[in-house]
Image 1 (cartoon, rainbow, N blue to C red):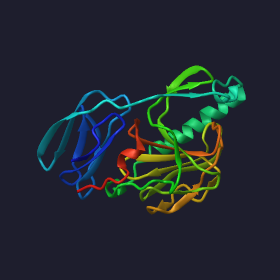
Image 2: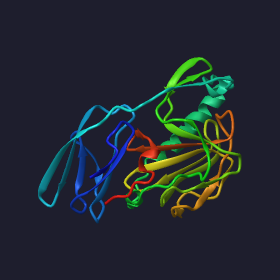
Image 3: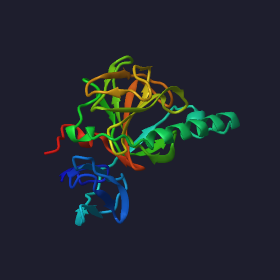
Image 4: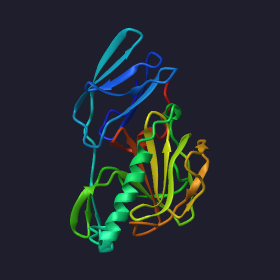
Length: 249
């Protein structure tokens, strides 16, 4: 098994075909027909987790040590109040409806294993403007940690699919995200691309690594043009940089 055993990290392993995969006695999926599986460690994952795979009449157990992440504090000022703590009933209803649609996208579990090929960066040139996991302070008020990697680039910069996947969500005009695309790379490993000014893909479409899926923008809750790149697996928030340059043995 290879990967980054750190808070926000991702690991890829191989076992018996279609084996059941458990983390801390909770089943988190099935290995592929070739035996490949992926697991992720949340931004706040405990220091030790127990991995168990069960297949072909046998169990294999491995205790995993998860290293602490290195998280900073990110202060963002000048945001409209509606983007920090909205109170308008119509806006709140819209946000709830959008949240339900996004939840369905993050729940996608395509029968594919694109994660084992590793990721490339979604932008060819950028300036890192926000690291994964940093504590957010919005207009002076502490907020949830930032679960993405912010990559500043000019509006219209092409965004590339870092790995093959199925488009699980593609919408524009969202209150917080603006243009948003989600890619399912297999077994519920979902990468998300926020604040896009243009979408070049549609829900249900299959994409290949390096394919242009849209363009950088400043839509939604953003103070300037950038790509917020996120990743989730089974409700766990992951650092998408964990798979850049990685390739399963």
